[in-house]
Image 1 (cartoon, helix red, strand yellow):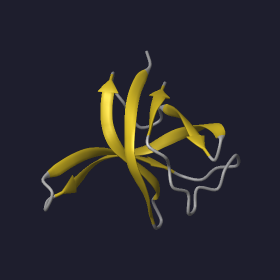
Image 2: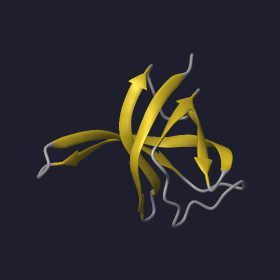
Image 3: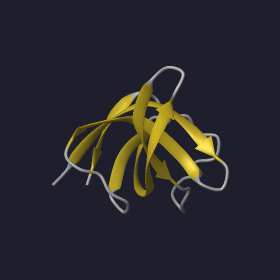
Image 4: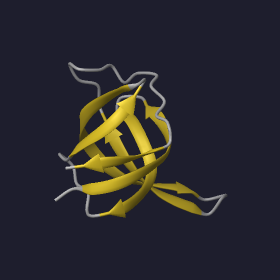
Length: 89
């Protein structure tokens, strides 16, 4: 069963990886799921290594954070993700 996730922003956490912060639009997401993400005009299937809650206390906003690590297909260091809806399996 696939899920959908709206990426609102992204940032990199040293020694953890690329974090895509946003909202789950449908389904359930867990560690080990594969996300199909557009990066620089190309699509990549990236494994989710962590699922976290991202809080912005001052703005009173709460998001889900999906963490991805670099692998043999792409180096995620310095990557910024565009706002997009992604499919996760």
